[in-house]
View 1 (cartoon, rainbow, N blue to C red):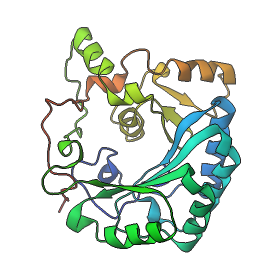
View 2: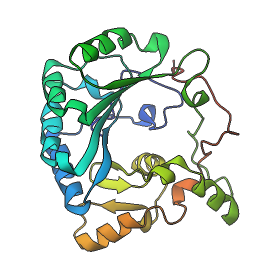
View 3: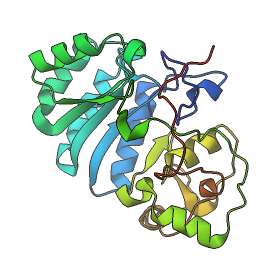
Length: 254
């Protein structure tokens, strides 16, 4: 995650951007170090994904995307997620062209809150940069809309309930790992809620890439077992099941 800054103030943001009092851009050199460190621990990943916040608020990430090309044979696709409020800069486009079909820009279309959707799709189509648009407004919203997962109190789930939720979790099924400032978690909620100080993750729930008290092999072993059992973050998670109430996406805070 290269930035906590965003052009929108979504009430139900799943990464809790509006809860950060001092949102920041992570320095480019730090991002590059984190990427290098990840590939010292991980042999291969299907996706290498950047999300915010809004990544295209920054015009200095082209160096990061270019650096990722050094590992092109160790991931399938570079994935960038945007809310279509800001167009990518020329330097970004130049690097994107070097990826060919090895990348995809995922555009979250929030209707009136995504004023650059048409301009962005036209730009990407012109430069033959792969993209997909996910509709989050009006009827038939992607995944039916958003859930309200903005509360952090323990929901008092039984052990069986936690396991039921965990075994049907999309994060677990996809084996997603999420990282911010050198901390890698097996779940975005675990990462962001702990960064905010809302929960205290168990030691097995995350890896500190730069913790010298653990060997690299110990870190790899933790990563291998991220998805073996429910995490602390599961206790307060409402889940994303079909029976969970959906809300219109991207409703804005006043």
